[in-house]
Structure formats: structure tokens, C-alpha cells
Length: 249
Image (cartoon, rainbow, N blue to C red):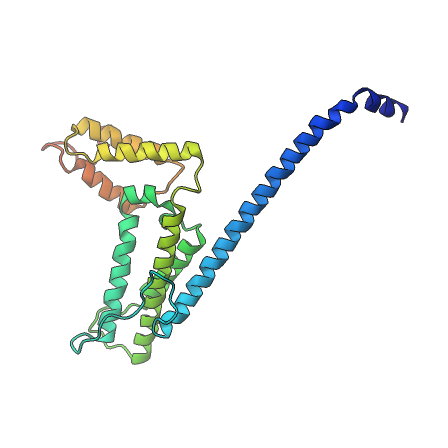
């Protein structure tokens, strides 16, 4: 023990910087813990809001969160409940495709295309249920109880989309590091060049390839989004140039 006491007498002053480092580390751990706790509370609140909205929608829309309108369209004698439900189903799908097929929106609101996000995953599950219950056509002979089940699934689909969309617009790029956000900003600028009809075909093709490179490992683009983007890039190419922007790469 004597060598230890000798060391402590000689280097007692090291206790002060060591204490400072330990305090800083403890502060960092506490902040990380608070951030994780805050995020868990946000998810729990959003889940509770989704469930409350779904229950309220089934009761005629009473108690829905602000910004969500799950009331059915105005009834008319010419439109059946099945037709109204299918029209509402198509409307939500069209709103979702605006995110799914638009690379610019995917960059701005990546959570809408990220199935790892709890509210996006809930929306996608609601979509699968509604799609699975959808009749073949509005004129299909469907029992009333099946129409009610499908209509309830469409309501869940609408509400789940609204909640997921609001969460994605709140999150934006908060889940990315500063370096990753810079890459996304570059990709957004290159996207403008890739779809700019005033740019030369070579400039658009180069910009398109660089967009894909910048997004690689950050965002997963759907096949539909890639197809739409390639058509936009190739749209103004002169006759004789291949449709795919990377065909001559």
C-alpha cells in the first residue's frame, strides 16, 4: 500500500481534472438519457393520439385531434357507402404516393418512407388492412357487414396517415447528423439540375447520378420514385438519346 500512498501524495492534483472529466461524462450520459426519455414519451403520446383518433372516428368524429377530419363525405342518394369508402381510400393512397414517388418530398420528409418509424409503420399496417378488405369494384355485391368492416379499415387508414404525416413534418431531418444533412442538401440542389429543362442532357444525367450517390446509404428510394425521376430527367432529351438517364454511362 505504501507505493499507492506515495503516488497519491505526489500526484494529488490529478484529482481535479479527473473530477472534471467524470462530471462532463456524467452530464453527457444524463442528457442522452433525457433525450431518449423525451423521444419515448413523444412516441407514446402519438400512439395514444392515434388510438383516440381511431376510437373517435368510429363514434362519428367526436374528440378527434386538431387537424384531423375523419367525418364521412356528405351523403347523397346517388353514392353508396361502398363508393364513398373506396373514394376515401383512393384519396389517402394518392396523398401517400405524393411522398412515395416524389424524390424531393422523400428528401424533405424522410420519415414518411421509413418503415422503422413507429407511426409510419402503423400507417403502413393500416394500409395493408384496408387494401386487403377492398372489394373488386364499387358495384360489387358486398354484404353490409363487410362494407362496414371495410369502411372502418379505411377510417383507420385515413387517421393513421394523418398522424404519420404530421409526425414526419415535425421530424423533418432531425434524425440525421450535420454531415448527413449537408449531403441531403446537396442532393436536393442536384435534383433541381437533374429535372431542369434548361440544363443540357449531359448536365441532367450527371446531376441524376450524383443525386443517387448522395442519397446512397441515407435514404431508400422506391422503385416508383426512381422510375418517375428517370422519366423527368429524360423527358427533354433530344430524339435518339436513350430513355434511361444512365443508359450511356
